[in-house]
Length: 256
Image (cartoon, rainbow, N blue to C red; front, side, top):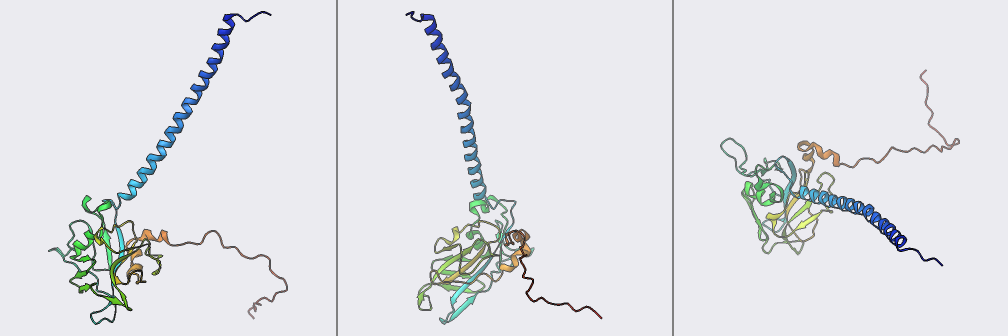
């Protein structure tokens, strides 16, 4: 039997090697494309996260409703909503506000950073307290409008009362018993996250239901874009077309 010549072996080997090389070259661009697509997705996600964390920006103008709620008064009886912060005004009559987070004596927090010191992660409750000359910690809250509300030894309904900030992310659709967050410490670090939030600064037992701010309904007037957050009917209204012809109907009397 004739044995294949060495030249034919070399040709066959070259052919096999060529096919393998061709497959590698076809697969390589595909791998590169997948890496680029995955990398683009990661970058886009990171950018979105960074964008969310960097707000409010210097071009944002947000509003949040707030109230101060005291579950007791000085005599240990039931308390309620406290006077809103008035703050101080400069010689032109504008609220003292070095950073752009303040209130116009309207029960609403106006959040429109003037500088980077109050933008992004630095848009915090401490900036609001500073502009309104308010101090708050776990021992109580002090403001010129209502004096001192002390949490030391405070009780409501026989339970210890503590200082807290209760937050609802959407004031327009908020339910008092369903807050998104309760904060019991580091109150100045509370971050304003979006337009249309609600905050109740309260002295009350832990996890106690506290009321929403009285000004939640005023937010639509100052932030009309919040209307988009209101729940809308999904899809067209469907009517029952399978009517019973024997069912009694309302008869319309003709005029005359």
